[in-house]
Each structure stands twice: as C-alpha cells, then as structure tokens.
Image (tube, rainbow, N blue to C red; front, side, top):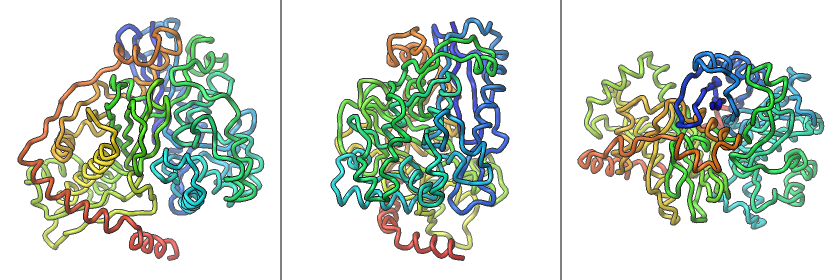
Length: 522
C-alpha cells in the first residue's frame, strides 16, 4: 500500500509517494507556481498567491510523482496535504475564491503567510485584547501576529468593505485545498488554533470583535463553518473531479489539512514531549509537543492537539532566515557556495560584526513585523563573506533566544531537530550547534513536510491507529548529527551577549518603525 503527501510551499508544490509499511519515499515531483508570490505593483508588505497554481500542483506534480515511483495508482490508499500558514483567502459558500470573479481587486486574492500589511490591525487587536484581559491572548505569548487570520480579515474589512461583505468564507488554504479534493468543507485544529485564535472550544467573542470595528462583529461566521477536525483525521473521500486531476483512485482517504511546519514533526519522528523541530527554509518555524501548558512570552501559540493529538503543541518562529541569505547573495552577486567557503575559513568574531535577523520582521519573541534588519560593526575593510557569516550567526542567535525563552517559561527543550532546505549547508548547521551549545539532530528526509502529510494520510486511511504509531514506523531522523565545539561555543557566548544587547535596544521599534514610516511616506 502507498500514500501520497503534497506539500504546498511559498514558491512551489511538491508531491511524494511513500510506502505505508516503512515510510520509504519511492518517487517525487515538484511543480513551480506559474505566478509565484504576487508582489509587483502592490503596496509595501503585500504578498498574494493564485489558487489556480495550487490546483496545478494536483494536476501535474501528483501524477509525475506516481510515475516516478513506478507504482500502480490503484495501490494508493490515501492523500494528505500541508500548506504555508497563515495563507488565507475569501471565498463563496461553495468555495470559489473571490479572485476568480474579481481579479483586479487585490483583496480578492489569497494573502500569503508573509503578507505583513496588516500590522496596524494586529497592533489594535493586541492593545484591545490586553486592555480587556482576554484570556486567549496569553496562549499566543501576549501578541497576535499580523500574519494571522483576524488581522488580515480586519484589513480586508477596512480597506475593501464591499468585498468583505461578499466573502462568505475566510478560509485557510490548508482547508481550501482539502475542500477541492473532497468536495466537502472541513476545518483543521492546527490552523484554527494557531492562526484563527480558536482556544478552549471558542473563537474571540462578537463583543470583542465589535469593539475593533462594528462591521467585524460577525467575522467568526466566516470561519466557523465546519466542525474542527483532528490531525490525522479523515476529512473525506477523493472526489471524481480530484481523481481525474491526480490520477488517483476515486474514494481514497483524504486527510484533514495541516501546516507545513507542524506536519514535519511526524516525518522526523519527533512527536514526543520536548522534541523541538526547526523547519529551516525561507523562514524558520519551531514546533514542539509538550505535556506542559505554560505562558511563553512571544510564542506564536500553544494549542491542544495542535502538533499531535493528546499533547500541547507549541509554535514559535523567525520570519526571515534563508530569505535573508538569498537577499545578500543577490546584492553582492556571489554564490552561496563561494560565500560559505570564505566565511567558514574565519574564526568566531573575526569579522567584527553582529546583526539582527529582522529583515522580514520578528515573529518570535517580539512579534513585530515592522522591525527591520540591523548590521553593526562594518568598516571599509568589511567583505561580503563577513556580512554573510554575520547574517547566518544572527539567525542562530535568534533561535537561541527562542529556546531560552521556552526553557525560562518552564517548557524544556530536550532535543533540537532540524528539517528543511538549509540542512544542505553543513557550515550553517555547525554554527547553530555551537551557538545553541547543544547537539543537533536532523530529519532523515529531504522532503519532510510532504513525508509528514503522507504519514497523516496513512493514519486517515486506517493503516495506523494514530500519528504517533505511524511516525514511529514511517518517520526518520539522525540523532546528534552535529555536536557543538566547546571553544567556538564559548566564543559565541560573547557575541551572543552583544546580540542580546542590540536586540533589547531595538526591540521597542522606536528607531526602526520611524525608518519604515519615512520609507513608506517617501
């Protein structure tokens, strides 16, 4: 028996065919989105996507992966999907995206996770929630992100109220794609909890929402349109239309939707308390199951059953990691390989630099997407490889802030496991081990989210009793793949102290917000 996992990323979708009995990955295919990230001609901080690109992944990548695997499609018993989040769209009650009928209205299109233009709305939500003592705020580290459903929904209402009124659904792409596969609307516990402020069986009250804007009082009616379904659950059966798209048998199991980061825990067999998985790519998302409920300042959220059923699931993150390195490479016209080789020849601190990794804002622990990057210590002798190394170190320092914040709040991190595309850079991995002063385990797959989705599909199809059982057989990781070097770790402690001083000095946003405002006005 086989299952298919489909991972929807920022720039492309990937499908992988996996054997149910042992998790062997037999074939895969990647389909780049034709429209990619839609930013051109839009105001600052906007980022949109096209739903048609997502459907094309089903039509192209899934059949290609099945052909590459060399299997009979009739042996496929289930399909699972994961998505970036919060990537969210307005739709009709039948699930049709409003951008199909209104392509010239930006707010009709899905807002990608890195759409940060709703920061002002997020700020108001946070101020009001704190002043009213809303109990759910503590579950998100004291701040709601501009990336999430309520801030983006309020932006839609305030900037295009007519379109807001026509949006009968405000739905995560993670749930929308499952709707297209099954013909049945569903809502998953992961995005509902982390991105839509669903806690203890309820969303924020109409009274709270009306205090933000009178027209926002009924917003939850656009979200609360189907029961909240568990991860690994059966969302429905593959429809005839979706079977024609994918070449898979009609009626096979379709797993409940999930988020790309959270689903990766199953792929790394990291579904036990204290196993923190850092999915490192364009950005980094940190997810961890735990048997303890605590208030962790600046976390993205803690959700019951949010990573695996039966445990609390914690999330934190860094908004820019690989994107920052890619930006620098583009600016200086050098390759990652060349800059890595030159940077690796340096001793810790030799470049004389410290950077703040906020080029795409700060997700954790400051939760402010209007912060921006800082590099301190440059001279006329500073070389491109110096800045490149400082930027890598800055992201490692940011990860250390997150780990230390969790442990200070009483939520221990027992094992730090890395997944994602940045695993390919061994130099970067060693810096993280040295900065964190702890061993790094690594996932045993190059396509963790897709494998994780396939594992959830196996559970939805009934091949395993639960996600933990499936992960034990089908997931894979290499323990202690990178060990910290004590001498370098000591040197990094000194640099980290400078980073923390810089971090705290710029954390209030007074300087960086002023610069952003001047830029926007200009």
